[in-house]
Length: 153
Image (cartoon, rainbow, N blue to C red; front, top):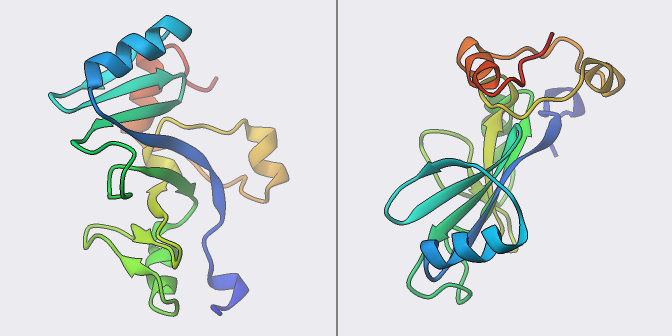
């Protein structure tokens, strides 16, 4: 077990990714239930905006069968580098050389994202209560938030 002072703090969920058999059909389905804007779209994926968070829909041939790298959640942390260092002390399967993404011992895929680089935002008083008052957003994340009218005051 890593030293408790050397572990990253989870801040929240950035996104959840679901596997679907057809992205267009999935957009139609979710659109019949919820009013939403698309954050982005590709041939095989769509990203439904939820303020500063999102739902990713990834089209796969066998949706619902064996889990793969499309079905995951994005865990926002204060320090991804600390997660990366700590992974070496676990039996988690590393999934990327670009960051600390991993599959836990039960097969769950966790994509680790830095709080400063994503739109997901905690209110200042919530961050302070979590002992994370010093966390800030990057200029690019603030720009994305400002474009949506969601930038902090």
